[in-house]
Image (cartoon, rainbow, N blue to C red; front, side, top):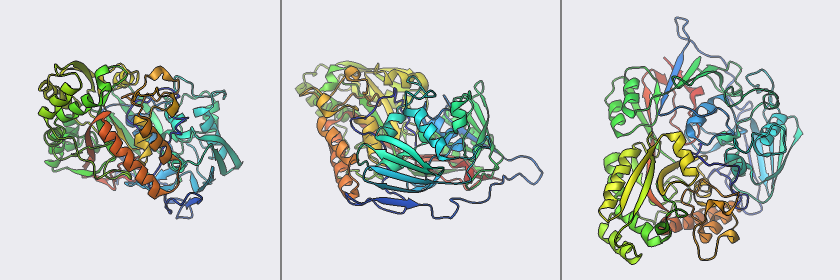
Length: 571
């Protein structure tokens, strides 16, 4: 889904060709170098013809309440990277391509068919889909959406200060897009680029109506899409967003009349609210909250292996000691990540060994976790010239994230572990929004962050998180890090400021081939390299946990995209 990092500025991987991909395209597998891939909707209409909403027997409207850890920052899909915003936006908007609920394969969205061959991709669009303002969706709406996101010469460009990294990240390889008919789009790419079709399924490429883009509507506060729910109101005071059922939705559902997203900061409080029936679905569940849900007679805990990574990034541009690989490895040995997983996450996570989770193509099964070995850590620090230790600040968010359900407790454990090898850690706790800005600006020494896959492709981890977004030749010889001011196109999502040229070449190669087997081998090499070089302390791959009230039916736990609330009904 959405990244949960803040990836600032309209800079990213034009040189590296940054974008995302799905490991498996619906209806096909990646072909050889010269082969095209074609996918189409299995149904004649692309979705259910049932567009009515359901009410309870007594005539009362049915309401679904979704409890989460924090509120939204904006409702403009082109101005955000955070998953909290995406949860709401995925109800209001559709993309050209979607994900199968609960899986990672691609399905038809506002596009019914697509074909990618060489440097060209063509899409046949759905007819009969309407925006919430009553206007029919056509190719011109996507053209306006595209231009608003990436064309600085367009009068209605979202603006440098608002544009999220997803614009250049997802669309950086597009040289041109044109409407070849009311319901046809043709993309011309700068190079062969395997992840492209899957990029179109990422929440940030939500399709907006041209009239709203070119009108005076404030899409950050009053969104309008073609999705199963339309926007009603946003109460910042009590951190609630209310949506209404779209009775003209082209796809399946919705099956409730209203959806309310409400923010409840404490994990256990949120779980208790589920138990008492104040909310219907909750996320951001830690071990204690999971126990509350498990013990509830009115709700159930549902889970699925996640596509996440939780890590501690070393800011090599800020802390000289972190530029020494032995220091980074020493810290990796000093932190007892196994105990963190077992004691803090209590079976809800596995110990990470590399950026890619086990269920993503390119995960290297031959790589093992760094063993907790304080003696070895001290030896490495001595060899690196830091035998007397040093100090640094560890920044952490205070609110739960899917990859760090208990970040402050985890930070305290890290501080305790490192004190045993002579490293003094001060913890800087910040609220989510200020934390994202602080770390994106590189003000941290080290920080906790993580990622939720946008589309299950390995490039979606490596490019936004560890590639600096500059050409290989821009990296100073003999150096494996760079400062963000090296280029206006520097990828600030790379919180470690790591710039390993061997890694960069592997990522570039993985992006440029349509051969799935070859891509897999390339990413396995990249996985081992990141483990060995240790730009992060690899901490957690968490499960996707949701608390669901017994009155809720047909809810699907989704490791990416979603939540698919159009499928849900409430008794």
